[in-house]
Image (cartoon, rainbow, N blue to C red; front, side, top):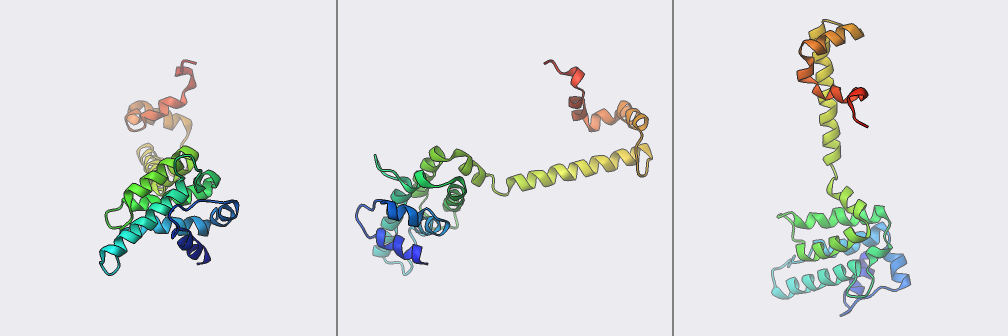
Length: 189
């Protein structure tokens, strides 16, 4: 929680900037999380007073400027490794969820700078969970295809090459046409 307190103090400044000591302190998982939290909570007026929302937006803007930099100044994104950049991107992408109170403009500003500094990290954050689902789908399809082949060839534990060739020639090519890609003699290299 010390990171959140330091970030909160820095965000009280009209033009917060980074020095070497702050970079060392904020370029950590907790420091990045604290900065992102201010962008994520922008607009959360709490008790509904306009001053609170304005203050939250001001803190969000300043946190975004610390993260991304401004004009010629470098932001924290210049000092993040891929793991921290991915963590920041994952958190900031949450600002685009309609159920959150994060400021999408500030998140976009930081994500654009993050993408320039660490495109693979932002891409990985965007795919978070997608690759797992695609791998599960591929596994499920492979298991289903294997079950179909065993069933249609009448084999129990092992399929002989001749049985597989007969199955494929008699119609298996419709079910598993991608197997043609494995025949390298058909490739023009």
